[in-house]
Image (cartoon, rainbow, N blue to C red; front, side):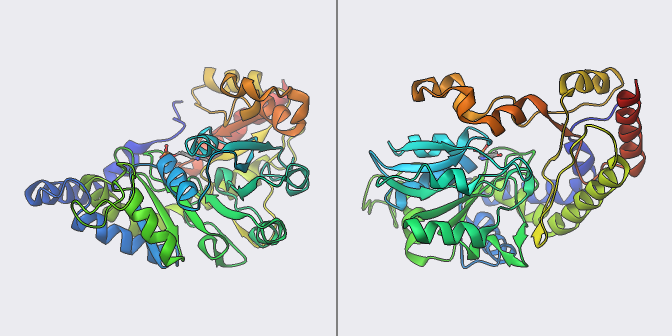
Length: 368
Ligand SMILES: *Cc1c(COP(=O)(O)O)cnc(C)c1O
């Protein structure tokens, strides 16, 4: 058996003709940075997100940083960031000379715990960064209420949640902006780095668009210092080919998740993803939890099944944040998760037979 953790080659095989034609068009147009392919993608992705504005940028980390800065997050300000996420969420705060303030996560959803967040709010707290980790959206009505109560901006990290929604409401409805990554392995992946900012706020959209392009609207009319974070024409063209497939790919992920859950329900000491009602989970990752994580992981590896860990350390426990002076006991839930979670293979092309084989191996491991 040889089941990879993700299989981008399987997806490419289904769209290669369209991709090659799109790449050829970019080369003959010489539309290398921004240009018509990127503009077309911005329009279609805004429509996909049911939002008014989309600004294509260089990557998801930049999308977050550009939004924070454009919302006025600056020196001395604090932003609430979950302890269980990829480091980029926190880096984007630091890049504005502000401080990421870590918040523990809920043991069932593994997303930011708003009760713990309330204990971390100070007079300097400027924004909250909900991360819809693994593809499961936070309860955004609750986040909205929390943010209104504390007068915070809402910057959503949607790097893993393309197409997720809460009570049929698109995520962009709930906050100031949604930040997307199109890193190749994401649910919608480019063939290189790419990202986008999605918002319903026309002024924020304008400022972000300028900030991502050296603070200008026209060639030399720089109104402020920005950064260079623009989407390549090649990535725009690739994403234009892929976006029409995203809904079907997401449905395939959801069907695969349902298969895993059906086969693994009742296996002792194995916690499966739990999805509160009304939340559309788009399963960037299918994450299980068990105290024997490392042993299970090597058993699967020895039997030809690749897995991942997202993430092996809670952010406040990383060396990068040692200067915060936290102890693991400060974030008991995120710290325990990092030791027990395991991401099983998940991609649209994963077959029912593969899922059955993986589930059988897990049951065999648990019986031994
Ligand atoms: C991938 C990811 C990012 C960063 O996106 P890049 O495009 O790689 O910069 C940010 N947050 C989360 C949760 C991610 O998974």
